[in-house]
Length: 513
Image 1: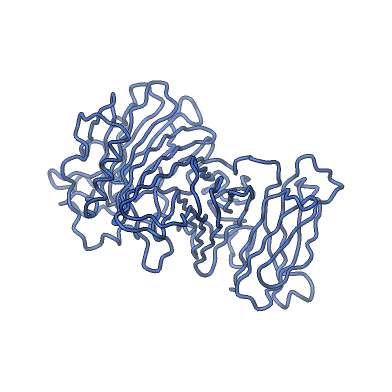
Image 2: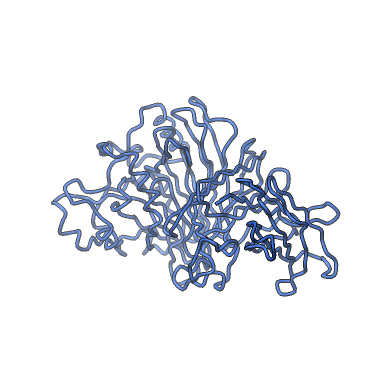
């Protein structure tokens, strides 16, 4: 795995929470060797942790060594002969990841074999330490920062990296034919809060040894932070798409108002929507280009992402959402023209609740960014009611890593958004021209035009012009927008047939530069 520099901001923030704090070494294992194991075990450990004062995670960096910097960390390699299940002929292989560089916190790792716990001790023989080996004092050990799973995803004779847990509560996965892109998290707390974000950590993993021939693997995790402890169960099924069924049980240490369930984190620098601030040779640079929401009333929303000049928060209020996700919609190389990053191969991520989540909102946070190395997009479910001390909260959902949003109806999807200066005299007033491309409609005649419903919260829009796009076989809607002095405007556009929605609801937030 190549470590993207976008983690610099994320985990630097996480480390800042602990700066100046002495990292205590872990005491006895939370679950002793040889103990019978079940999901209830992790729930009991989490409940017990939540009843006690929070203790920061131990440092995974050898006590008497120099700090493991970026250059040293990138030279550490996992030893192939210390890869678990490599010789057993299983469908999965497990590798342990070293602590160091940004990943300073240590995690405890255990295998579940024949229903019993086998705790793994830190051992430098898991790694080829390279030049760092000569700088360690006798007895120094490099701790674990996470785990990596491999599976013959694209070819039956090659074990591809498909899934990784590393850093705070972050994890990533890929489906067949994809490259790593956006990340998921176990939990988000106080994202965008002026007082600073709290980063929960997965402090221990219990990995169930899969049966021979098994196409799924089960991982249990213990989450811990100053505000909450939690028990998680992940059922990972590689494929097209890869799916992860998540069961989470949360035990608050304090009342939680600004909490994010099933959070997703991505990068958006610019797209074909608006190139006014970019002089890049590439057409677009992003891991995701839109937030899609299937809400509880049956609406299909598409919110085009933006790289704003100041932090923006958008709430899509809902009751029992059917699903939401950050989507990389354009899958063609021509859309990006990047021979190294291959953004057209980045996964989307889609959340499907497996139980009613009640009232709340899908929250989207867009953070200004000048470089593609930084994740600046966050989306999650924010419950309307706060989580309170003394109560237990469960959230179950399926997380898939598809190319596109799951097909659930025959309506037209938004394919592209393009924005530029209006043509003619109004250009001098700052009037903007919008062109929104929808894909084809099932069973719709090309000589029959749908209607378009266009609304704006501020400013003025022209009457939309609808054209059949003979090249894409879809529909193009064009209109102009005049802010008329407004600072912010929310726009909504949808194709209709006799007032019945036949497309996604395209949404755009315009803000004054």
